[in-house]
Length: 500
Ligand code: SF4
Ligand code: SF4
Figure 1 (cartoon, rainbow, N blue to C red):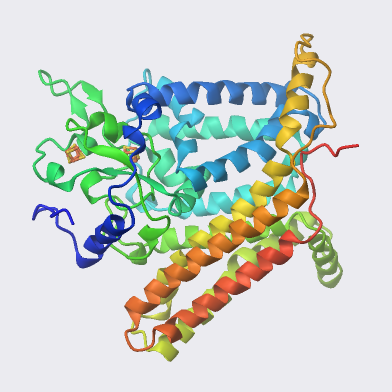
Figure 2: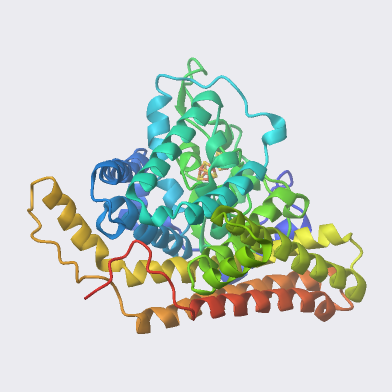
C-alpha cells in the first residue's frame, strides 16, 4: 500500500482503513476524474450552479404552498417535499453520497447574505456537539405526525420558510459552517446515512499532503500579497483532508477540492459503511466511540425510521386508541408523545442496554456497558438507512408520476395552461415492483449492520467473538423483522392522489 509520510502515518486502525480501501478498490473510481461530470464539478461555480435550481424550486414550493390549492396531493409544496424530495435524497445517498448538501439551497441564500452580513461570534464550545440536532430531528418527526404536515401545503411552506430563516439567523451570527455542523436536522440525517454511501471526498495521495506546506484545504487560499483576502475558503466543517475519515460531517461542498493547490482531492469510491468497521481518530470529530452525541444521533436515525413508518400504518391508530382509553388521555399530541418516547427513547435504551450488558458479561468485554452500547450503536446505521430507503423509496416510486399533473395544475392555476389539463390518473409504479425493492433495501441494511457488528465483536473479544456478536445480531434481526412487518401493513398514501 502507499506509504504514508511519518507525520501523517496513523494508528493501526487508521492504516487498516487504508488497507481495506486499497483491497476493495484499487485504483478507486474518482468522480472528479471522469470527463464531463468531473470537469463540471471541479469548476469553481459548480455548487452554485446546482444550488440555483433548488433555490428556485424552493421559492416556487413556498409560493404554491401559501397561495396554491389547499388539497395536498394537488400542491407542489406537499407533493415535492413529502413524496419526491425525501425519496430522491435517500436514493442519491445510496448511489453516490451527500448530494443534497452539495446542492443545498439554504447555503446559497446564506452565502448571498454573507456578502453583506459577516458573522462575528463563534458557536459556544458547550454546544459543539450533535445534541441540539438530535432534539431537532425528534421534534421534526413529532411535528410531522402531530400537525399532519403532509396534508397541509400551508404548514409545509411555513416549514420551508422557517428552515431558511433559522439557517440565515444562525449563520448570520456564527462563523464557519455552524448551521450545517451543529444544527441542521437534514444535514445530520445525511451525515449518518452517508456513512453507508459508496463515495467519499478524500485525498488522492497522502504523500502529496505530507509534502504540502500550505494546507489550504483547511485554511483556505488567500491573496498572496495581502494574506487577508480569501480567494477560496477551506473546509468550514473543520475537516482536515489528510486526517479526514469517512463522510460524517462532510457536506460534499467541494471547497477543499477548489482550495487544494495540488489538485489532490477527489470524490473516490470506497467500501460502503467500511468507515464504521473501525474507530480511528477522525479530523473534526475524534473517535466515534467517545462521541455519545453521534451515537445518540445514530440511534435516533435508526429508531426514528421505525417510528416514522409506524406513524402511517393502521396499527398505530389501534395503539393510540388503546392508550387513550387506558390512560384517560384526550389529547392526541400527548398520546403521540408517549408513543414517540416509547419507540425512540425507552425501546433503544432497553434493547441496547441489554445487548451491551450481555456482551460485557458473556463475552468478557472489559469496557463499561455504556461504552459498549455507544460503540455498537454505530453498527445500526446501515440498517437504519435501509429502513429509511424502504419507507421513502416506497412513497417515491409509488407516487413517482404525481409530479406531472401537479405541475400541469400549477401552470393552469396561474392562467397559463401550457402543459395541458392535469392527468390526475398518473400516479406511480405498481406496488408489485416497489415491494421487492423495499425488502431489498431492508436486507441490504441488515447485511451491512451485521457485518459491522461482527467486525466490532472480532476486535473486542479474541476468545468469544460469537458471544460478543450475538446480542447485536439479535437487535438487528429484531429491528429488521419489525420493519418488514411494518412494510406489509396497509400504509397511508400521504400527499398522493389515488388513481381512479
Ligand atoms: S491542501 Fe491538498 S495537498 Fe495540502 S494537505 Fe490539503 S489536501 Fe493535502
Ligand atoms: S470542504 Fe469539508 S465539508 Fe466540504 S467537501 Fe471538503 S471535507 Fe467535505
